[in-house]
Amino acid sequence: MDLQAQRDQYPFQLSGGQKQRVAIARALAMQPGLLAYDEPTSGLDAASTQRVTDVTKDLQQRGVTQLIVTHDLPFAEAVQGRHFDFATDVER
Image 1 (cartoon, rainbow, N blue to C red):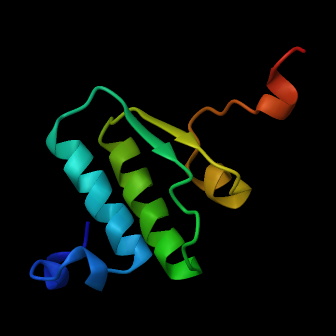
Image 2 (cartoon, rainbow, N blue to C red; image 1 turned 180 degrees about the vertical axis):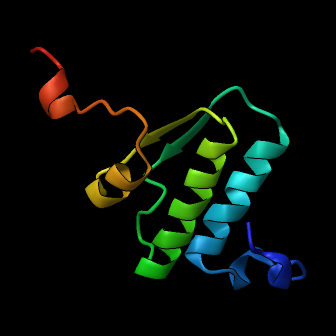
Image 3 (cartoon, rainbow, N blue to C red; image 1 turned 90 degrees about the horizontal axis):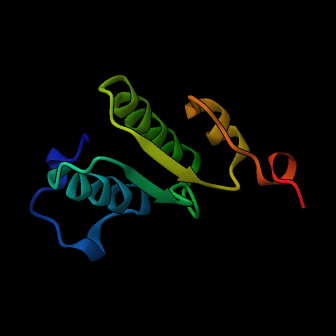
């Protein structure tokens, strides 16, 4: 997660991207069958978004099943294995 330098910091001292990666690490510690994200890049700058993208891709390579709900289409396209678009894939 690339957070070794922040190991002695309090949550209020972490950036948004660092907090997001800590949340992912905490969730992974429970060895879930599915890791779900709700807008994981919301409010992040480009560098933090890229770090979250890298973590997500790494987890995908390791076989971790992930469900991501996002409005960030470039992020979704970068990390998708399969995607479901409510705008086009749902009959009304």
